[in-house]
Length: 214
Image 1 (cartoon, rainbow, N blue to C red):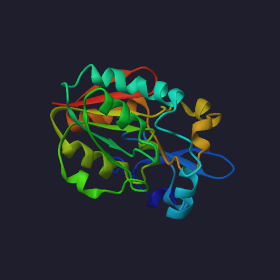
Image 2 (image 1 turned 120 degrees about the horizontal axis):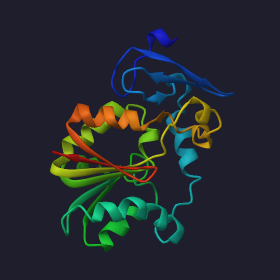
Image 3 (image 1 turned 30 degrees about the vertical axis):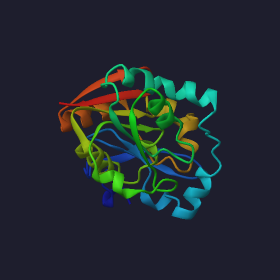
Image 4 (image 1 turned 90 degrees about the horizontal axis):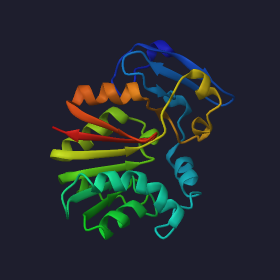
């Protein structure tokens, strides 16, 4: 099975076994270091949405806002006042978009399940956020490339996702147990992607990455 698979981020065929648990197998790309779940383990659309419907992320949840502030604050320190932004994968409760709008930004939102307004994907933005999103992408290479094309020069892509450390930590990592999490980035992966896009990479804490379009 491995021989017939390609990395969903970089497209390389050099993928090796990384880990197996009771329900899924995980592979690792030898080019970009993405760890990913083969498509045979992906949930169908109905089951995937049912998992998301269990989330309790509300716009007025102060704990959730504190969590999102780890991305919002460094981003607001870097973008112009009243910058135009897109919250990609905002979910049913677009708290981050609300926070950024309250700070003066001109915000649009998109989510394929809850805010499927595809017209916003035809616009350009000074920044795009994706918080707890990239680990859900079935085709991260194409999706991230599309977001990058939508960014204006000098703009920022702000991502929040937990990172792979090594196979030992991965084996006991709760993050891999969510059945909607199908790809897992590491510092090496983001370094590869930034280089391939000519982006300036800035690591903010343990799970926040900012990528600036030169």
